[in-house]
Every structure is written in C-alpha cells, then in structure tokens.
Image (tube, rainbow, N blue to C red):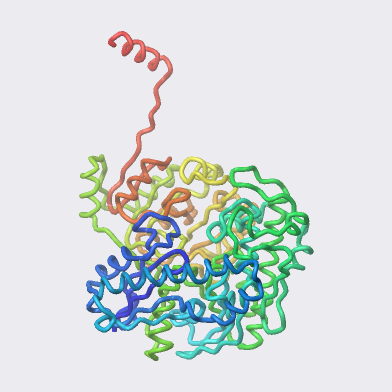
Length: 586
C-alpha cells in the first residue's frame, strides 16, 4: 500500500511517501524551491519523494491531506456572524484562501492522474488529528497522553486525548480565538519579529529579560479550566479580528500596559526582553497545568505533543523535568511540516486500521548525494578540493583548530533543526565562537544562542537531562562546572538546546564528535543549520557551495571532500609597493 501524505494549506508545505506503513521519504518543499516556510503546493517535493521511493503516480493508492476545510465549519460561521466588523476579513481568510488552496490541489491532481475516477482515493484529515494522533502512531509508545497545540487549524487551537494501540480517544478541544499559539504570536510581534515564523527568536530572547516584572499581568491573560480548556482575555489583543499588518495582534490595552512595541531593526529595550520573559514563563506554566490534567485523566507514563507550540523546546524541557510524565515524544517536524507524515499515518493506522509497524526515530528521511555526484558538481564549479578517506578525522582537526565548517553529509534531516546532515559545526570551547558565527556566518541577532550536539555517552557529564533528546527539542541546563568548558553553546541562563547523537543513527556525525572529544576531551560540537538567516537549510551540493562562498565559513566538508578558503592578508608595505607598481604599469 502506497500513501502520499501532503501538507500545503498554511505554511511549510511538505510531502511524504509511505509504503506498507514504512516512511520511505519526507521532504519540505522549501528545501527544493528555496522559499523559506513556503506556502506553495509541494509539487517538487512530491516528485522527489516518488523518485526516492522508485515509484510513479500510478503506484499511489491513497492521498492523505492534513486539512479538512469543512471541519468545524459551524463554529467558524457562528463566530463570523457574531463579529460583523470582521466578516470581510473572515471571508477572505476562511473561504477565499480555502478555495485557492483546494483549487491548487485539484489542478495538480487532475494533471497527475488525468481524472478522479482513475486516481487514488483522497482523504482530508482534520488538522489536529494530523498533529498529535498522527504523531502518536509513529511514536515509540504503545499508549500515551496526546496534546496538540498551535495557533489554529480549522478553528481548533488545542486537542487533548489518549492513544492506545490503534485507537484514539479525544477528551476535548479549544477553539479560536482562545489560542496559546496566538498568545505567543502576539509577543513575537511585540518584539519586532515575524509572527508564525520567528517564535524561536522570542524564546531565545526571553532569558535576557526578567519574567517577574510583568508575570502577574500576563497571568491574567490566559487561564486553563478544570478540563484543560484554554481561555484568553481578548481585551489585550486584536488577532481575533483576523486583520494583518504591523503589530495587528496587539490592542491599545496591550501597548498601554506593556509599553511600545519594537519595530524590526530597532535595538531591544529592557521592557521588550522582560515582556518576552513573562510570556515565555506563563506559556510554560499553563501548558504544565494542561499536562497535569492530562496525566490525571490518563495515568499513563508518556506524552506525545505536537503542533507549532511544541517546537518551544524550553517548554518541553520543563515538561520533562516537572510533569508526572516520564518522557515526551515530539517528532522532528512537529509543526505543520510534520502533518504530512501525521495525516498519512492517521489514515494508515487510524482509519484503515493497519497494525502499527513503524517508529519515527530517524529524522534522516530526505535526499542524499553520492561522492560521485558531489565531485561532479565541484568539478563543474571549477573548485579546488581535497579527498580524505577519513573525513571525520580531518573535520575534527579543523574543529580543534577553531575553524567553522559547513558539514554536508548523508541523508538530509526533516524539520526546523539541523541534526548533523546539513549543519554548520564549530568547537564550543572557544568563548567568542557564538558571536563570530552570528556576525560572520549566520548574519543574525547577536543574542541568539547555538545548540550543542553531544554523543549520547557524554550527555550526563555535561548536561542535566535524564532522557535523550535526538531531535534537539528539549532544553536542559548545562552543568555548572561545565559551563565554562562549552561557553559557545551555553545560553545566558545556563541552558542549552541539546541534541544527543547515537552512532547507529548517524555514524559519520557521531564519529566527528567523538574524534573531537578524543583530541580535546570535549565530545560536544556547536551545531546550527547550514543556511543564513532568511534562507532554507541547504539541500544540494550546489546550495552548500553557494552558502560556503557567501559566508564566513572557513571550510566545507562535503562527502569525503574538503574545500578551504585562503585568508587574504597582505603586509602594508607590500601592499603599497604592489599598488605603486600596478599604477606605473597602467
């Protein structure tokens, strides 16, 4: 049985292929069309997934789409009728948008399959069932509490439930405008970032502020009822009017209480950081309240959490440390990109009732390139390079010497975090390394932290985390006696967004970290995504080469090949003599 899973309705368009319940390929469209967080229909990703699976359109039996536009339609219409001033925006947001998205899908479908009669059966899966229940079916747990939480999807903003084997039980949902996702989008706008995309920047800014300054006020904004329902005091916001524009999420009351919002490019003021800190802390507290209610309802050991809010790794870290759950599962693409996978598995396991036979613990499900393909590109670009049989030894030596390297190896990961296939790596022992990469390579805000990747055997020596974190989605504390050892990956509050690395999952990435540890005593690397701000993570050798030569990277380690930049440095007397000579010649 071949299932094509699709997400294309909101953002982060993605496609995946399942064959008899096994995830063969999953690719975000942005990696191929180079439009970050793209909303375009994922035609390129579909074609690439089919090619990787050695399949054609004729082989597809079912298509699972991670949206059901008619779901909760009655709730949407009642809201629209009760808010006549927002009716025009509502129609544009809910109906015109839906029409365009469905038109793009059926246009592609008719081109691919020629007719509905001859094509595969299409299943429109409700968005939140593509989140937590879909994630549960690929989790390592036989049973687990379920929590889906985001801005909104078909009017739902959160879902609580319980999964056991192939069965899903729903306890309740919250609906727009009562949304923790929108609550956090508001403070993202307040801090001068782009809502729906830059919430990670807000999370990184929060430790720079003092949450106690505004925490009592922010606590008034959001409450959780005894059943886990979310309730927002909407007098602080305007996002419920569905209007778009600069700071359109914020009401005059919000600005009066919390101060003037920051515009993009302006310096941060103390109140921006304090407000970010308060919103982050209250988000964590309220989700922990929901977790307690879920635990009391389920009395199970594990939690599966999905949706855009589940990418808040600081919040996830507190759930691991402070909730009654032993551990949580957050799939590597836990946002809307992962709903392509979630919809496909909800169909396969939940609707078609096939037994669960796959656990999504391997994020490396994208494209890969052989040494032959890489060398062909290097030659076409007329570049000088060296071949190294032991590429991990060479890379570890570069890192030991303080070089910043582009690391392009193996099969591309899925999700917003680089996990050792398309990464920029550096030695975290150099105190100035964070500032150097932010300014010379990533071209981003100086306060933003970088994540550590550590071999799993070294986790307990450096980090206060009892469980593993293979997808870099659980923030923990760096042990106090190790913070000075790895300063470049220790945030201002002593925390780190750790990735634990197992040899069997990514042997080459594991080896380079271990070899660095053999040389320095610290088997930890600084790991950030192989891209610059505003661009998607690199996908192809050509993408990697372009990023290498347009940034301050020192070396590119791609397959078994190494490219190095020569530092241009001319003594002043030599420069003057050379300039005079050239002038006279001309």
